[in-house]
Image (cartoon, rainbow, N blue to C red; front, side, top):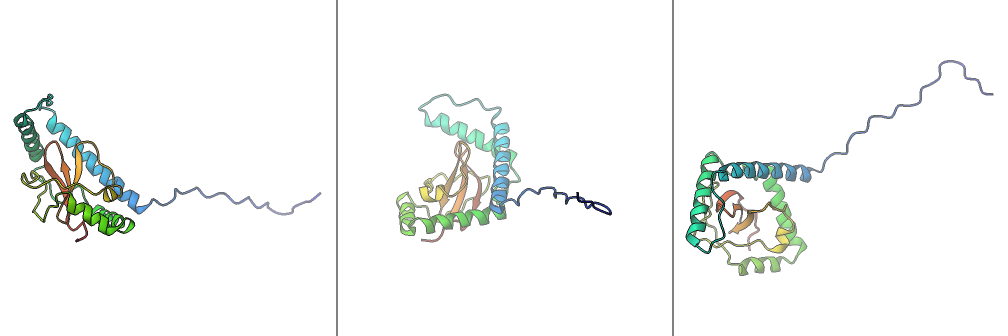
Length: 185
């Protein structure tokens, strides 16, 4: 039988487990998504007094509702500025994700895709302004779209020159934008 003289040493206590450090990119995306949700909440409040659009073939009725919703959102966001949704960290991350999409797929194919989908030259866009009426809505190439966070219904990414635009489809409002997000051709 083993006898121990003196105080018995306590077994080492396990340290409280710390959660692993969060991925910096996921924190940026989480912040971006919270900003988008803030916009959607504001948009919902702005649309509250507007009757829903009934099925119609009338471009005039569609345009009237778009203008009404757009003006209400613009009034609610009268102090909106570039960077409200796309924070500096979000801009940096998006530029990185878009550059990765170029590298991972064939850059020539991405550029060709951009050229074939009604390319839009650099036209000034402004936060909280209507997307320019005469400017085509250039779509995102699938390889880029697959690399950026998905958007809620009624919001879309558009490309104007080298600028990535976040647009409210129903209100035709530029919510925010990232200049220089699209590599030059």
